[in-house]
Image 1 (tube, rainbow, N blue to C red):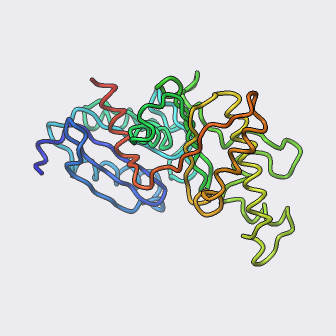
Image 2 (cartoon, rainbow, N blue to C red):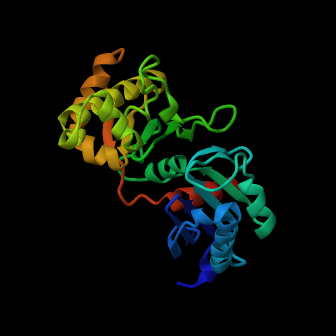
Image 3 (cartoon, one colour):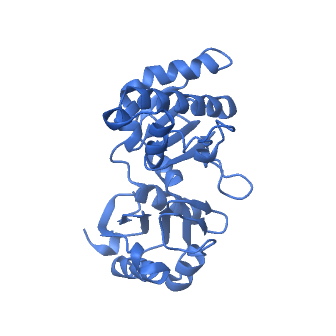
Length: 283
Protein backbone atom coordinates (compact mmCIF):
# COMPACT_ATOMS: atom_id res chain seq x y z
CA UNK A 1 0.00 0.00 0.00
CA UNK A 2 1.14 3.56 -0.61
CA UNK A 3 2.16 5.73 2.32
CA UNK A 4 0.11 8.54 0.78
CA UNK A 5 -3.04 6.74 1.87
CA UNK A 6 -2.13 7.00 5.57
CA UNK A 7 -4.38 9.44 7.40
CA UNK A 8 -3.90 8.55 11.04
CA UNK A 9 -1.04 7.18 13.13
CA UNK A 10 -1.34 5.00 16.21
CA UNK A 11 1.55 4.12 18.52
CA UNK A 12 1.59 1.53 21.30
CA UNK A 13 4.49 2.43 23.58
CA UNK A 14 5.46 -0.35 25.95
CA UNK A 15 8.32 -0.88 28.34
CA UNK A 16 9.67 -3.63 26.05
CA UNK A 17 8.58 -2.65 22.54
CA UNK A 18 6.99 0.13 20.52
CA UNK A 19 4.46 -0.71 17.81
CA UNK A 20 3.62 1.99 15.24
CA UNK A 21 0.80 1.56 12.74
CA UNK A 22 -0.60 3.98 10.18
CA UNK A 23 -4.17 3.66 8.91
CA UNK A 24 -6.33 4.85 6.05
CA UNK A 25 -9.70 6.54 6.57
CA UNK A 26 -11.38 3.14 7.02
CA UNK A 27 -8.87 2.27 9.75
CA UNK A 28 -7.11 -0.33 7.65
CA UNK A 29 -3.39 -0.79 8.33
CA UNK A 30 -1.18 0.90 5.72
CA UNK A 31 2.21 0.60 7.41
CA UNK A 32 3.56 -1.08 10.51
CA UNK A 33 6.86 -0.99 12.40
CA UNK A 34 7.98 -2.56 15.67
CA UNK A 35 11.14 -1.73 17.64
CA UNK A 36 12.54 -2.53 21.07
CA UNK A 37 12.06 0.33 23.54
CA UNK A 38 15.28 2.16 24.41
CA UNK A 39 14.61 2.37 28.14
CA UNK A 40 18.29 2.17 29.14
CA UNK A 41 19.22 5.40 27.33
CA UNK A 42 17.18 7.62 29.61
CA UNK A 43 14.45 10.09 28.80
CA UNK A 44 16.32 11.75 25.93
CA UNK A 45 17.24 8.45 24.29
CA UNK A 46 13.68 7.21 24.55
CA UNK A 47 12.24 10.48 23.22
CA UNK A 48 14.71 10.60 20.33
CA UNK A 49 13.79 7.04 19.43
CA UNK A 50 10.08 7.86 19.39
CA UNK A 51 10.63 10.95 17.23
CA UNK A 52 12.80 9.06 14.74
CA UNK A 53 10.22 6.30 14.48
CA UNK A 54 7.42 8.80 13.81
CA UNK A 55 9.55 10.68 11.26
CA UNK A 56 10.18 7.50 9.26
CA UNK A 57 6.46 6.90 8.81
CA UNK A 58 5.11 10.45 8.81
CA UNK A 59 3.70 12.04 5.66
CA UNK A 60 1.62 15.07 4.73
CA UNK A 61 -1.58 13.01 4.75
CA UNK A 62 -1.38 12.24 8.48
CA UNK A 63 -4.14 14.18 10.24
CA UNK A 64 -3.38 13.20 13.84
CA UNK A 65 -1.27 10.94 16.03
CA UNK A 66 -2.59 8.72 18.83
CA UNK A 67 -0.16 7.44 21.45
CA UNK A 68 -0.94 4.82 24.10
CA UNK A 69 1.44 4.50 27.04
CA UNK A 70 1.61 2.33 30.18
CA UNK A 71 1.09 4.18 33.43
CA UNK A 72 -0.98 7.07 34.71
CA UNK A 73 -1.99 9.55 32.02
CA UNK A 74 -3.89 12.81 32.27
CA UNK A 75 -5.66 12.56 28.93
CA UNK A 76 -7.01 16.13 29.27
CA UNK A 77 -3.48 17.50 28.98
CA UNK A 78 -1.69 14.58 27.33
CA UNK A 79 0.71 14.45 30.26
CA UNK A 80 2.38 11.21 31.27
CA UNK A 81 1.92 11.59 35.02
CA UNK A 82 3.82 8.47 36.04
CA UNK A 83 5.16 5.56 33.99
CA UNK A 84 7.26 3.11 36.02
CA UNK A 85 8.27 1.11 32.93
CA UNK A 86 9.48 4.11 30.91
CA UNK A 87 12.53 6.33 31.58
CA UNK A 88 10.51 9.55 31.64
CA UNK A 89 10.19 11.97 34.53
CA UNK A 90 6.91 12.52 36.33
CA UNK A 91 4.42 14.80 34.57
CA UNK A 92 6.19 14.40 31.23
CA UNK A 93 4.36 16.61 28.62
CA UNK A 94 4.34 14.01 25.84
CA UNK A 95 1.42 15.52 23.89
CA UNK A 96 2.95 19.00 23.76
CA UNK A 97 6.37 17.68 22.82
CA UNK A 98 5.12 15.63 19.84
CA UNK A 99 2.65 18.30 18.71
CA UNK A 100 5.36 20.96 18.71
CA UNK A 101 7.59 18.71 16.62
CA UNK A 102 5.08 17.44 14.01
CA UNK A 103 2.43 20.21 13.96
CA UNK A 104 -0.43 17.74 14.15
CA UNK A 105 -3.02 17.08 16.88
CA UNK A 106 -1.71 14.44 19.28
CA UNK A 107 -3.88 12.33 21.55
CA UNK A 108 -2.22 10.54 24.50
CA UNK A 109 -3.98 7.97 26.66
CA UNK A 110 -3.38 4.98 28.88
CA UNK A 111 -2.74 1.74 26.99
CA UNK A 112 -5.64 -0.13 28.62
CA UNK A 113 -8.08 2.62 27.61
CA UNK A 114 -6.76 2.36 24.05
CA UNK A 115 -7.04 -1.42 24.21
CA UNK A 116 -10.67 -1.24 25.32
CA UNK A 117 -11.49 1.34 22.64
CA UNK A 118 -10.31 -1.12 19.97
CA UNK A 119 -11.61 -4.20 21.78
CA UNK A 120 -15.19 -2.93 21.90
CA UNK A 121 -15.36 -3.31 18.10
CA UNK A 122 -15.05 -7.09 18.31
CA UNK A 123 -18.32 -8.80 17.19
CA UNK A 124 -19.19 -10.16 20.66
CA UNK A 125 -18.75 -6.72 22.23
CA UNK A 126 -19.95 -4.36 19.51
CA UNK A 127 -23.44 -3.97 20.97
CA UNK A 128 -22.22 -3.59 24.57
CA UNK A 129 -22.11 -0.08 25.98
CA UNK A 130 -21.03 -0.87 29.55
CA UNK A 131 -17.77 -2.80 29.78
CA UNK A 132 -15.01 -3.05 32.37
CA UNK A 133 -11.65 -4.34 31.12
CA UNK A 134 -9.07 -5.69 33.55
CA UNK A 135 -5.64 -6.88 32.40
CA UNK A 136 -3.74 -9.00 34.94
CA UNK A 137 -0.10 -9.47 33.96
CA UNK A 138 3.11 -8.10 35.43
CA UNK A 139 0.86 -5.42 36.92
CA UNK A 140 -2.88 -4.86 36.80
CA UNK A 141 -4.58 -2.22 34.67
CA UNK A 142 -8.17 -1.38 33.97
CA UNK A 143 -10.48 0.66 31.79
CA UNK A 144 -14.17 1.47 32.08
CA UNK A 145 -16.71 2.04 29.33
CA UNK A 146 -19.96 3.59 30.56
CA UNK A 147 -22.82 4.10 28.09
CA UNK A 148 -20.34 3.91 25.24
CA UNK A 149 -17.89 6.43 26.69
CA UNK A 150 -14.62 5.91 28.53
CA UNK A 151 -14.67 7.01 32.16
CA UNK A 152 -11.84 9.45 32.96
CA UNK A 153 -12.82 11.37 36.09
CA UNK A 154 -11.76 14.86 37.17
CA UNK A 155 -8.01 14.40 36.61
CA UNK A 156 -8.25 12.19 33.57
CA UNK A 157 -7.04 8.88 34.94
CA UNK A 158 -10.02 7.05 36.39
CA UNK A 159 -9.91 3.31 35.84
CA UNK A 160 -6.64 2.65 37.71
CA UNK A 161 -8.35 -0.29 39.39
CA UNK A 162 -5.09 -2.00 40.31
CA UNK A 163 -4.64 0.55 43.11
CA UNK A 164 -8.01 -0.29 44.65
CA UNK A 165 -7.60 -1.30 48.32
CA UNK A 166 -9.05 -4.75 48.99
CA UNK A 167 -7.09 -5.71 52.12
CA UNK A 168 -6.28 -2.66 54.23
CA UNK A 169 -4.60 -4.47 57.12
CA UNK A 170 -2.75 -7.21 55.26
CA UNK A 171 0.83 -7.13 53.93
CA UNK A 172 -0.57 -6.90 50.40
CA UNK A 173 -3.21 -4.19 50.23
CA UNK A 174 -4.15 -3.40 46.63
CA UNK A 175 -5.81 -5.48 43.95
CA UNK A 176 -2.59 -5.40 41.91
CA UNK A 177 -0.50 -6.57 44.86
CA UNK A 178 -2.84 -9.50 45.49
CA UNK A 179 -3.09 -10.78 41.91
CA UNK A 180 -0.28 -9.69 39.56
CA UNK A 181 2.96 -11.25 38.42
CA UNK A 182 5.20 -8.71 40.14
CA UNK A 183 3.91 -9.89 43.51
CA UNK A 184 3.82 -13.68 43.01
CA UNK A 185 6.85 -14.22 45.25
CA UNK A 186 5.28 -12.14 48.03
CA UNK A 187 1.95 -13.93 47.64
CA UNK A 188 3.73 -17.30 47.81
CA UNK A 189 5.69 -16.19 50.88
CA UNK A 190 2.55 -14.95 52.60
CA UNK A 191 0.84 -18.28 51.93
CA UNK A 192 4.03 -20.17 52.84
CA UNK A 193 3.99 -21.85 49.43
CA UNK A 194 7.48 -22.99 48.44
CA UNK A 195 9.14 -24.56 45.43
CA UNK A 196 6.67 -26.08 43.02
CA UNK A 197 3.82 -24.96 45.22
CA UNK A 198 4.66 -21.32 44.44
CA UNK A 199 2.67 -21.73 41.23
CA UNK A 200 0.38 -24.39 42.61
CA UNK A 201 -3.27 -24.68 43.67
CA UNK A 202 -2.92 -22.61 46.85
CA UNK A 203 -1.56 -19.56 45.00
CA UNK A 204 -4.02 -19.95 42.11
CA UNK A 205 -6.95 -20.19 44.51
CA UNK A 206 -5.80 -17.07 46.36
CA UNK A 207 -5.45 -15.03 43.15
CA UNK A 208 -8.86 -16.25 41.98
CA UNK A 209 -10.50 -15.19 45.25
CA UNK A 210 -8.78 -11.79 45.36
CA UNK A 211 -9.60 -10.99 41.73
CA UNK A 212 -13.17 -12.08 42.43
CA UNK A 213 -13.38 -9.57 45.28
CA UNK A 214 -11.99 -6.81 43.07
CA UNK A 215 -14.40 -7.59 40.24
CA UNK A 216 -17.29 -7.75 42.72
CA UNK A 217 -16.51 -4.22 43.87
CA UNK A 218 -16.28 -3.00 40.27
CA UNK A 219 -19.60 -4.69 39.50
CA UNK A 220 -21.29 -2.93 42.42
CA UNK A 221 -19.90 0.46 41.35
CA UNK A 222 -20.22 0.30 37.55
CA UNK A 223 -22.72 -2.53 36.90
CA UNK A 224 -21.14 -3.52 33.55
CA UNK A 225 -22.73 -5.85 31.04
CA UNK A 226 -19.40 -7.58 30.46
CA UNK A 227 -16.01 -7.98 32.09
CA UNK A 228 -13.18 -8.31 29.57
CA UNK A 229 -10.22 -10.04 31.21
CA UNK A 230 -6.75 -10.61 29.85
CA UNK A 231 -3.03 -10.49 30.60
CA UNK A 232 -0.46 -13.23 31.16
CA UNK A 233 -1.43 -14.05 34.76
CA UNK A 234 -5.12 -14.21 33.88
CA UNK A 235 -4.52 -16.49 30.90
CA UNK A 236 -2.14 -18.76 32.85
CA UNK A 237 -4.01 -18.97 36.15
CA UNK A 238 -7.62 -18.02 35.61
CA UNK A 239 -8.88 -18.25 32.01
CA UNK A 240 -10.38 -21.67 32.70
CA UNK A 241 -11.94 -20.45 35.94
CA UNK A 242 -14.40 -17.93 34.48
CA UNK A 243 -17.42 -19.70 35.93
CA UNK A 244 -15.89 -19.66 39.40
CA UNK A 245 -15.15 -15.96 39.08
CA UNK A 246 -18.73 -15.34 37.96
CA UNK A 247 -20.01 -17.27 40.98
CA UNK A 248 -17.92 -15.13 43.35
CA UNK A 249 -19.26 -11.95 41.73
CA UNK A 250 -22.84 -13.21 41.72
CA UNK A 251 -22.58 -14.13 45.41
CA UNK A 252 -21.67 -10.56 46.31
CA UNK A 253 -24.02 -8.79 43.89
CA UNK A 254 -27.34 -7.18 44.73
CA UNK A 255 -29.38 -9.37 42.41
CA UNK A 256 -27.45 -12.66 42.54
CA UNK A 257 -26.12 -12.26 39.01
CA UNK A 258 -22.75 -11.60 37.45
CA UNK A 259 -21.77 -9.88 34.21
CA UNK A 260 -20.49 -12.27 31.58
CA UNK A 261 -16.70 -12.69 31.59
CA UNK A 262 -15.08 -12.60 28.14
CA UNK A 263 -11.44 -13.31 27.34
CA UNK A 264 -9.64 -10.31 25.88
CA UNK A 265 -8.76 -10.58 22.22
CA UNK A 266 -5.18 -11.84 21.81
CA UNK A 267 -4.71 -9.80 18.61
CA UNK A 268 -6.47 -6.58 19.61
CA UNK A 269 -4.22 -3.70 18.56
CA UNK A 270 -3.56 -1.02 21.18
CA UNK A 271 -2.08 1.11 18.37
CA UNK A 272 -5.41 0.85 16.53
CA UNK A 273 -7.27 1.99 19.66
CA UNK A 274 -4.93 4.98 20.01
CA UNK A 275 -5.46 5.86 16.34
CA UNK A 276 -9.24 5.54 16.68
CA UNK A 277 -9.18 7.89 19.67
CA UNK A 278 -7.05 10.41 17.79
CA UNK A 279 -9.29 10.27 14.73
CA UNK A 280 -12.40 10.78 16.83
CA UNK A 281 -10.87 13.82 18.51
CA UNK A 282 -10.00 15.56 15.24
CA UNK A 283 -13.08 14.63 13.20
